[in-house]
Image (cartoon, rainbow, N blue to C red; front, side, top):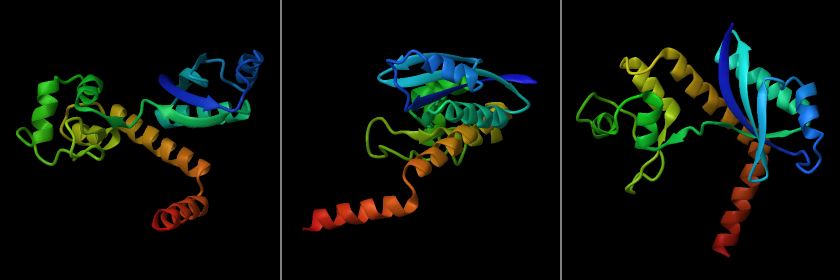
Length: 177
C-alpha cells in the first residue's frame, strides 16, 4: 500500500470543546494532523490505501463519522499560472508558453477571471493535459480529478439542486423587482 497525502477542511464541531481531537481519533482519523484555522478544522492526512481515490473516500467517511461537516478537500482546483508551475514542477515561463499556445496545442482555457491579468485554470483539466503531454505522472492527474470530483459532490450535498434552483429564482425575482 502507498501513503497518500490529502487535506480535508471541516466544520460542525465546537472548536472550544477539546474533545474534538478524540472524536476524530476514534472515528479513524489517527493518521491526520489536526489544526484550527479561521474557525475551520484542517485535517492533513497521510493515509495508506491502494489508490488515492480510496484514501480520499475513506478519509471523508472518517471525518463524517466524527460528526463533522466536510467543507472541501484541498488543494483547491482553481489555480493560477504560478500554481500550475509549482504543482507541475515546470517553470512559470514554460506554463506561460503552454497557456498562450506558443508551445503545445489545446492547453485548457482559463475558467475564471478570463478577462483579467490573473486568470484561473481548472487544475484537473490542466493536469489531464499535462499527463497526456508527458509533463506530470498519471497519479497526479488522477489525484487532481479526484479532488475536483469530491469538491463538486460536497458542494452539491450542501446545496441540493432543488434548493439551488429556488435560490437562483428568488434572486432573479428580487433583481427584477
